[in-house]
Image 1: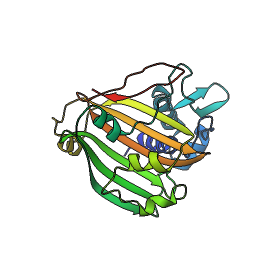
Image 2: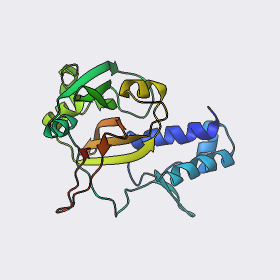
Image 3: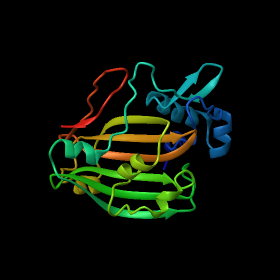
Image 4: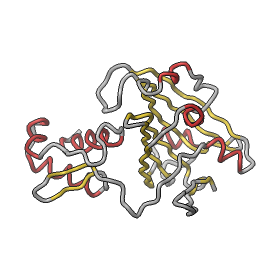
Length: 232
């Protein structure tokens, strides 16, 4: 991996995991260049890409900071996919693909943690692929939950209140593995929802959900500042 991409990806991981919160000051270009053993120009390129993606703000003479969500963006709820699909009159099913307890590693997410992969089905067709991590330090009971039988998002909404959330939504092309699991072609556009939730300042969970582009819309229904998401 080239140095600029490594710097960009590692800073993005720290932000998306919740380790670096909005307003957190990013190390200076000089500090990052020393840390990664590269030129300041390489660091500047990585920071420029992060700023272009909206993850950080670069302020002249002040430095770079983790960006705050835009004021004009609506606050989204955290939907339960099982509930949304059932409300549409379709049978819902969750299939866990991998469940692993993490105790080591340095990817910016708190340890110990559970790493879970699985697929959500609607009417027995793949609906969304999910990759999730749950911080066991904040959610100790998750260690004993049966995530083979129940989707982790459904369990979390029923057991753990959250106080803050951050969504990043992108149009992406799936990997070969993701396309296979979703039953689509490798060049089919998908909607990626990247979400972190906190409880009283502690990260509860980070999840990446990949939806088939022909099966899901995000619909804003404004009433007293609320917004909802629903499958289409």
